[in-house]
Length: 579
Image (tube, rainbow, N blue to C red):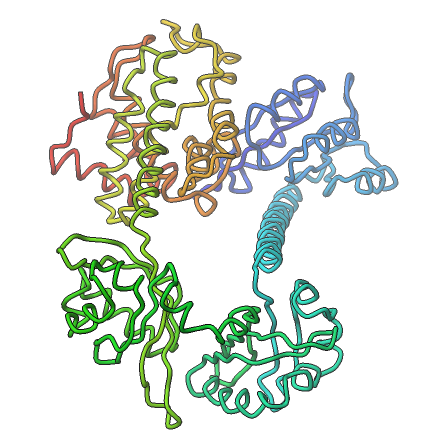
């Protein structure tokens, strides 16, 4: 089967061009070629199409191979550039290679062009893959550095050996303890030596949990550089290699000095705290509670709460699965932070609360009770929902703004959004992801705000220049949306909705692995609606033609699963676009 090849040929001789074409076709290529012989023509060809290789004669009447190479390099495109000449000598060829040409072939030896192109295309692909991998690596490292630097806790790693020597500590350790990073890393016993002598036995006793359960949590005093002591909350996690051998410890230190110092007045604080504080038995009964805890759940006093609630799972939890998840987390880690669930108040009304709870054990490791803090977050939950609704309203306003400038496609975004949701549901995507796809689809053409109205509503076919201007709407839409903090990748979906799996789309020519599934679903829905519906320059083509288009391009231009789902909801489930 012939291999496709798109070649841009910089050559003044039609005869030589035909010879090259014949050699490439004989070498097994299904060739798409274009000949240019001026800088202007070459620049236009590079801008208008995507090529696999550039073949350039060394000497032309108005051009030269080196000038063509320089023009090509200015575009930043990475694909094979091969000199094909009948007069070039070895010294000139070396000069061209040093200037950046990938290889050269003599016109009297055109069969050599086949292995040269194959080799250079492979190497170009390898270069692109390496560049993408390096870009991803740098992005991952940047994200990790940001997370570490912005984390309020001090992050560290250590060896899972007898001395637990520190191998890395985040820079904010200086603000916490006064020491520099090198103090911990260069002195392998620095961490142990600076723990308060009275706390060391407890620390090493608790460390046995690290190797038994993979997690360790302890509170102890650590000597500050100024000579005093700070209380630290130390959380460790053990990382094992594929063979199960302990490989590394990852941990965090949080300063809990103020809390520890405040424990002298704990009883007063306990009773007057604005958040609920309690202890409960593993069986699900309250042992102690403060006034705030009782008030949160609608009881007049802690005593009433303790005597009335005899089964926390049955009487408080709206969803028993939440209680089971909570108990599972407590059993595994002995600590739960920020656990959110819905609960019943005394009068039967519903409320949301956030729990921070730990398990205390006896000397044998048997859990004695849970102790923690409960915060009523009902109003916060309502605020989040209100914010979500405000975002939805903002998106709808954006969609309306686009449609007021393009009356002939009014409703296009709404119909596309409806179809994307149907496809996403057919693919059984999570409801939260479907909501993001719906909102992105509702404003996917927002970039058309910057396109002149006379182009949008032109009753005849638009020109090439007008089409290029229209194609900018995906990039413009991205620029409009990229700084808005949606909980979904709205800007990216809008940016990618005209991309195609084979890289033939725009604005960036991305391929399948680089595209979000959200974007691929939107691309299918957008094409189907656009073809099926009326446009000012043509009548409606009809849904059958639209479905034929995406079906014909599935797996090449369009996501195979998204196309299959689209066909199913139209042909088997009788879907129709909303009026």
